[in-house]
Amino acid sequence: MGIFIVAEIGINHNGDVGIAKKLIDVACLAGADAVKFQKRTVDAVYTGEELDKPRESPWGATNRALKERLEFGSDEYREIDAYCKEKKIEWFASAWDLESQRFLRQFNLNYNKVASAVLDKLDLLHLVAEERKYTFVSTGMSSFDEIDAAVEVFRKHRCPFELMHCTSTYPTDDEKVNLKAIETLRDRYKCRVGYSGHEVGLAVSYGAAALGITSLERHITLDRAMFGSDQAASVAPMGFMQLCGAVRKIEKALGDGVKRVLDEELPIRKKLRGY
Image 1 (cartoon, rainbow, N blue to C red):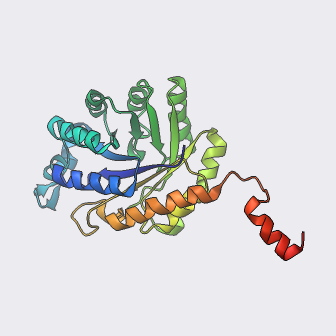
Image 2: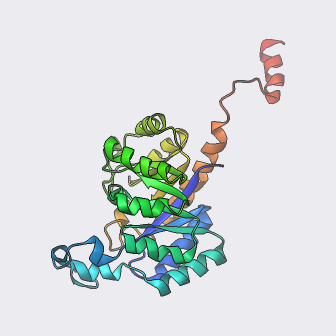
């Protein structure tokens, strides 16, 4: 199995199913394996004080107006589910609360995702892990103690998982990415390790691919200038197509690590060495 490439739509759809479908189209055209969304129960995730804070957006003047606009309900997700089936691409979502995880169960998805923001919510992790679906666990802004506890939950439930190295800044400065932590996670937990990136550009993701990651997640957008907190840390359509193509080339180029003389080298060897 090659690198599992996830196009993170997240909340970049701005509450518009039409935009979500266009982003699904981008992921399909690029050759991604899946698209991912985020699901929150607004009143469970945020305090009333936080929701009442002033925040200007195209949909109102409070944080609540923005947060509620960005959430899809059953009708929207049924439409997304049908569209992804039509396009033959997997979709899944990271739930930020118990109600949202239970909500997602109606779609019989093949994958789960634990976002960095909720890695410390062990009650949610137990709810996810009891489904025993393959789960991607992001480790941004998390200590070893917190990751240890999360890994223990998934192993207790015998739920297949992989960790994803991540730095939770948007966008992430290149010098803060610390790609060598991919190997650190792999050595410590003896599991598959992917990379969830928020950097600007593609070069860092290429570096992650060369380090043998098993999954790669990048946010995608129709236009990085669109309204939204994640747009600037996202990859535009042409860039995402370039990313997927390059990652597939890197996979092929990595090979199996066995040093051998290729049959194709023998004529060159005879010409240059005489034997």
